[in-house]
Image (cartoon, rainbow, N blue to C red; front, side):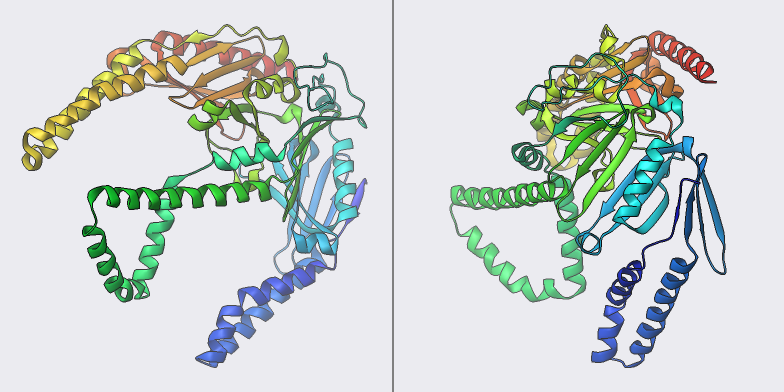
Length: 502
C-alpha cells in the first residue's frame, strides 16, 4: 500500500458555507414574505449538511502499486477502482478559501472521455502533494521510459531543443513561463461578440419579464426622438461611439479574466511529465504524462495570426473538444499565448520524437475553390429569389455572394495542408485564422471518410481522425482517392503501433 487517507475535516466548514449560500434565497423569502419558507430552508440545510457529514465519515481512498481505490457512501455504497495505467491526467485546484484552510481538490481523469473520473474534495495540501508524488512514481515503467526533448531551461531561448535523452525523475525543466504582456495580448484578442449578443438578449428578456422594459420605454422613446433630430453624420458618430464602448468593455473584461485565470502560468517538464500551474484567485495545477498526449494543436484566430501569436493546447484521453473550443478552467491549455515560431519550436517538449520528422506538406485539392464558388452561386440565386418581391432589382446585389464565396474558397485552399510522417500526422487549415494539429499515429483510434452531395459531384471528401477521448482532427476537401489512401495508411500504422505495445 502506497497511500491511504480521508478527506480533511475542514471540508465540513466548506460544506457548511455552501449550504448557507444555497439556502440564502428561501431564507430571505421566509424572513420577508412567507414564514413557511424558513421551514423549507431549514430542511434543505439539514439534508445537505447531513449528506456532507456522511460523505466525510465514509469516504476513504487507498493507493496501491496497481490501482487507486475510492470507497464512499452510507446507505448507497460505492467502491471505485481505477487502474494506475488508465489514469491520464491529474488536476489540482484550490480557491482562496481552500488555500486559507490549506486544502486542495484532486481530480483524476481516465480515458473514458467524460472528464473527471474521481474527485477528492478536499484533501490537505500535504496529502494532495503526497498523492501526486506517489501517483507519478507509481506510473508503469513504459510510461516513463519515453525519450525527452524539451526546450532550453532558459525561457528566453526557445529555439534550443535538447537532444532526446532520458530525464532523471527529480530534474525539472522550465519549458515556458507566460509574461504579463502575453496574457494581455491573449485577453485583448479573445473578444467573442456572439457571447455579448446572447448575453444582451438574455438581459433584455429578463428585464422584459420583470417589467423594467415598460418602465424605461418613455426614456427610450425620448432618446430615439433626440437621435432622429440629429444630423446623419452625428448619428453615425453616436452609433460608432456606442459600438466602441461595447468593444472596449469586452476587451477590458476579457483581458482581466485572462490575467486572473492564467496568472503566473508556467509549464515545466519533470522526468516525462508535463506540469502546469496557474491562477490568481483559484490556483490550478495539472500533471500530464507525455505518453498520454493524444493531440497537440496550435491555434490562431485571425487577429492573433496577424500579430504573430498562437495558443498551444494538448488533448489527453480524459476529454474531447473540437478545434478552437476551450475546456472549463483552461485545463487543455499548455501555453496560453506565445509567438507562433516559439509554439512550433516547443512541440518536441510535448511530443517526443516529432523533431525527427521531415514533414512533406501536401496541399488540398483546387476543386475546393470551384465547390465554394458554386455554393456562392446557389446562395446568390436563393437570396435573390427570396428578396425580389420586396426589393425588386436591388435584390441583384446578392450576386456579390459569388465573388465573396470564391475568395473564401481561395483562402481555405491556401491554408489547407496535411502531411504524414513515420510516427506523426499533421495538418493545418483555416480561412483567415489558422489551426495546426499534430497527432501521434499510435494514438489513432478511428479514421472516417465522409462525402456530402456536393462532395460526391466534385469527387471530394472530408477525412476525420479520432483519438482516444474523441477529439476529432478533420481534413476537409481531399480528393476521394487521397482520402481513402490516407485512411488506409493511418489505420495500418495505428494497428502496427498498437500491436507493438502488446
